[in-house]
Length: 100
Image (cartoon, rainbow, N blue to C red):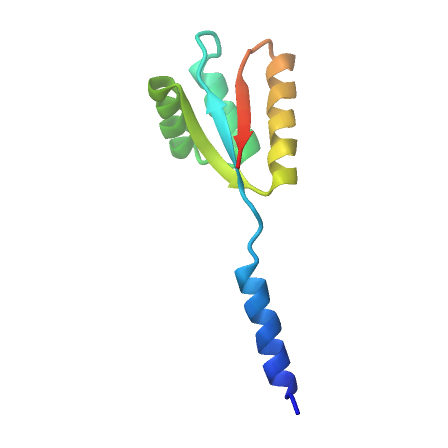
């Protein structure tokens, strides 16, 4: 006869093992988007502190791209759309991509 505690432990183990796939949001460098705009995007949409945003912006500038966060698929797509919409509204060509 199985005890309830044993069943609960098995359920907890399954939940621990099954982690959601995370997708990387990668911001790409270009020659037209201002550095201040990239910092603003990182703070507004990806919840980075000002210091984190500046560090990421410099990495994007120097290495042509940077992974700026890892999110579930739906959240990553939503953030990507918000970033692209905000960039277009502000006449900036900033692009970001999502990779598994």
